[in-house]
Image 1: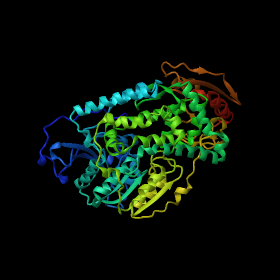
Image 2: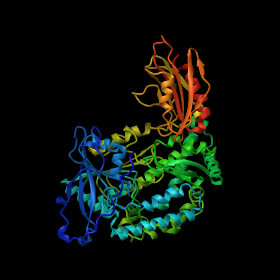
Image 3: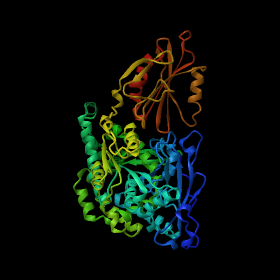
Image 4: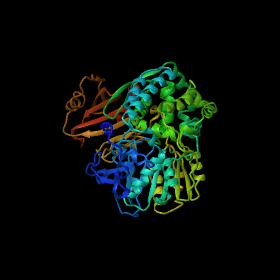
Length: 640
């Protein structure tokens, strides 16, 4: 994923326009080059981009205008509907357009095959102007991640940075009170009119579901159908619900692992192991390194117990990380925090894709303005795991409210804390493990709607649409007019827990190379074009590689692979002889990963020419297991 493009700076200040300076909706959209890369052959290449001019304050034309960045993607296949779907990003503050570039447009594919999709950066976000980024808080996060200050002191430093950002944005003439869900919803409807659509469908995820409900309330005539993915109702005290939602997801992890024979065998007491890891890291934080951005910016870190618990909470968002959590927790309990630092890298990188200013402008007006300190405090007290591991100094309630006192925007109208009732056909999706918008909140949304289908997806985290064919097929069927799409596929999903590396089973199989190779049981092939290469887990590995490289000698290969690494001293092990093959084994550590390369010259007359390569890649602490359980057994078979 590319690093977000630099913010070109604040929008130049101009004299406030009079009412006639604000174009009518039908004239408000102007085509323009896309602000993201559109490589040929990519789903992004078809994008039609532009800018929508919107009133900064719909009630006061003299307040000026904002510019909303927009991209329209024509249907990539046979169009089944002329009604487009507009994608409503989460956050609040999620950068949709940069997300397009990061994913290569992957999140569009489920919706875009048979209909046009409209994507835009909400006001205050990304390529829209003004953008409410806070580099001040990002730099403080970089500094704090390598320290172990008391939480109160850490929070004070972060709040000072938040205040600096707020003062800077206000000094640029930005009225932060104009960045909220109601204005966002008005922008959505203005965009619909500007693009010439009588109606369109809404797909909202996370905060996007709140925005979708606001559109349903304020502009119902422009909406045909709605998908609310990982939803919560306006009337819920979202922040007071976090401790209970967190404890529910943790308990679900413990219970699900205990109920699975393989998981319970390998991780017999994951709850106790998490407690052990928390205590160990709280008493003696482990140093490490993490990626801060996508351009190779590596920062020093200290993994504490609270940071580990917060990372596990965040991992429940990500369906592909959940099966790996017992292993991550078990390793952390032994002091091996490299896997946890991979999750930390993901968290730090994702932070760059959130507009902090938009987040606080919206949350402080729409959510936290209606929160009560006593309710927040009581929620923490009622959920002991959250209290112990994520609020050990009892600052959660105070910090939630203090952040909004710092941001200093007025409360929204009371209607922003009231349920949205509608008869628009709506599909509500919920993931079983979702730690922030759990199924109960999705059901609460559904209870307010008279024409609704609610579906819970087992083994899924936050965001259902892109987690396999089932969610995609259900959404597409609903948008195609099926009010009760067949969701029986949802019950077929289960978690394939990642076992410990030292429990790997290797099976000898034939290969396209004409020799036998090893296939680790339960590991995924890296792809059809890379036979002989297997991955234990798509985020962390380890990786086992077996291939044949023609036209080289072992010495040439090793010099090309290892000799070109500046400043890295390889370690060479004793040569290993297996039959007629002599394997040269070299270890190198590159960017926190251990690479073990074994190369042998193919035997003349064997039908194979060149270099036989067997390699394993993992964490340095896994050295003995990588050698004893993966590489050495592979060498006994590979090439024979």
